[in-house]
Picture 1 (cartoon, helix red, strand yellow):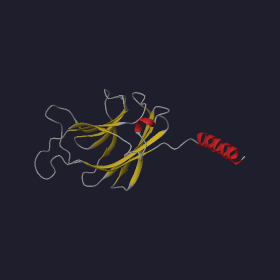
Picture 2: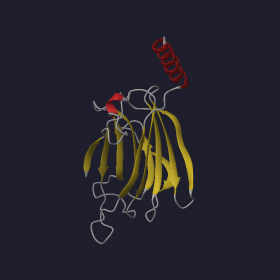
Picture 3: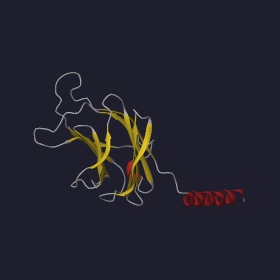
Length: 188
């Protein structure tokens, strides 16, 4: 399965994704893969890949897991996957959280291990492959070779959240000052 999910204002609480061009966007979700199934007949090892893209197709980075559920990531889609050393739980939902810094073109990645009931920081402030103008598209690619039984194709995803950037303190202070000036003029 290969699919591009186009984010919209419902995902961002009423704000159009293309209008968020600066600051840090928080993205999180939980997932539960099917059992490990070994390399595909063509020799590829990727089972799931999520590509974070902007509205014009610039790729920031990728997250995924291989056919044995080893969690990986990479900034450059043509480079080798970087192993986290974590194997996703096939019986429970593990979680991921990404901070996508559109201003500085960086990303960070945290992982929730259900079995350990704890979050682990995987990477902080890694450079994105391409500068992203916004976060408008999640590219999905899912390939597995389990095609029989009740686990065929089972790769569940749940509880997606998308957080809008919080204004920087200096920006917020400027807004408060202008607001105060406007109120003062209205009173006179």
